[in-house]
Length: 349
Image (cartoon, rainbow, N blue to C red; front, side, top):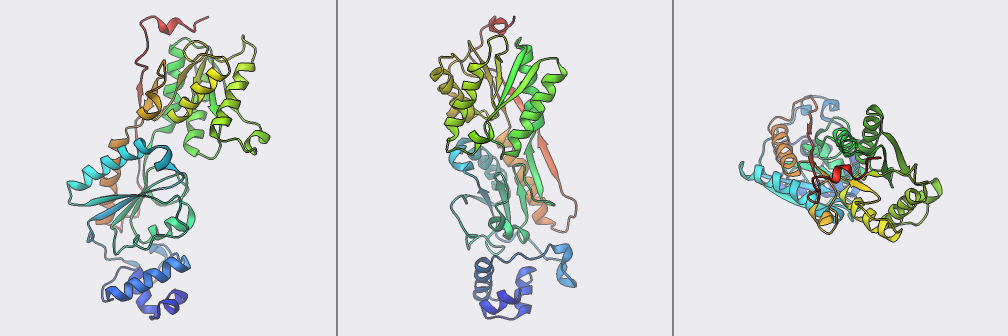
């Protein structure tokens, strides 16, 4: 804090007033202090660890503005998914006279200067992890995560990832598959790993032979892009003995399913005949060109956006709440529209 004060040319007490949301500081001075905080990447200690009376922040919804921040190519690779979350939040916010902005932080090395308590009442965060300094400012702004994350003490509205895996395993079992597999091309996404583990657990419970089809260490460290990794996994399945080859395949996202369909055809395999797929996210942009269209699992993105804003609003209105809230929305199976009345017998021995 002393370094911030020195760089901004103000007193330690002035920085303290701004950090703790107290009045009595001019807009020009606050702008200088906020700029110094961003440049130095200063992270204020949690409210509960701040000494004296300043530990009690006087906060109100004064900006009527919150932001949905995305990381890890979420907006680029899953634009329809994020847009649906945004639409739910936007509609809920409009009912309270609050605006919602959408911003991707994929290419930001520092926190954008306008992300401050002066300009925003709250943050909705969507990505694999906190990205360190890019969300440190959330220590001063009420925030909420929409994905599985590493930050502690932050509210969340999450998809039911364990339920996703369970639904997928039951679906394939009901379709008559006795040998199934989950494609696991990456290990960094915690949501995908939870889905796959739940899939394998549920398949084991109902007596289905299940496996995780994953890359070797050498393949993971290679220069293969996502398409190449999916193709390598499909090749592993194609090379298996026919009596041991899985016929039901769980893919943790619709984007991966679209790549898996293309990989199958390159390997001389036909989706819907050699393999039956079930994926997740219900993203029409990835599913619309697939035939037969796979079953998918809808995560209720617009409802999540609405719930997330309502929970964030309660935190904005009462920042003194100590209890962290985590809400989980039930996923829903969306069967393939290309199923015929007798297609469920296709893979039965």
